Amino acid sequence: MGRSPQLLFVDDEERILSALRRSLRREGYELFCANGPSEGLRLVESREVDLVISDQRMPGMSGIEFLARVARVRPAAGRLLLTGWTEEIPPAELARVGVLALVPKPWEDAELKRSLRDALARGGRRD
Image (cartoon, rainbow, N blue to C red; front, top):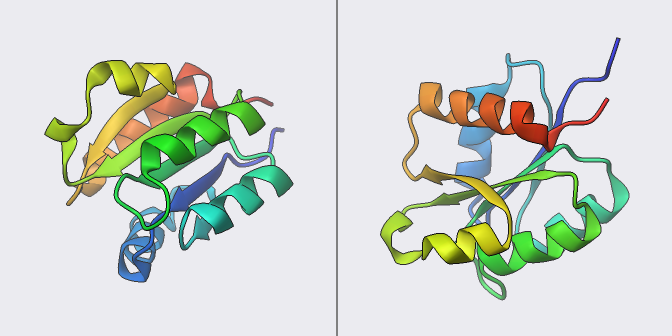
């Protein structure tokens, strides 16, 4: 039997991380949360995460920049971008860093769960 999928959420707002934990606590995932890109990179370097979900607008580094760095450290990890500004990110930029999906803020729980399942099924997870 394989391990539970390991998901890393990166957002500079603790209330967002808390809401994500509440939304997903019964889904069978092992959840890690990082309060910003620096902490997120430390976790990506130290854990075999299957899926990384990052906010776009964070101090010090955008979500796109963060996910590009994740791709170099953990190329097999799936990458999703969480943002309230979906229209401002060019699709070519998303493709360049291998973002599988945009998750809008505020999210609908059912849509978030579907996006996570789809991303894991598309190769964001290795057993």
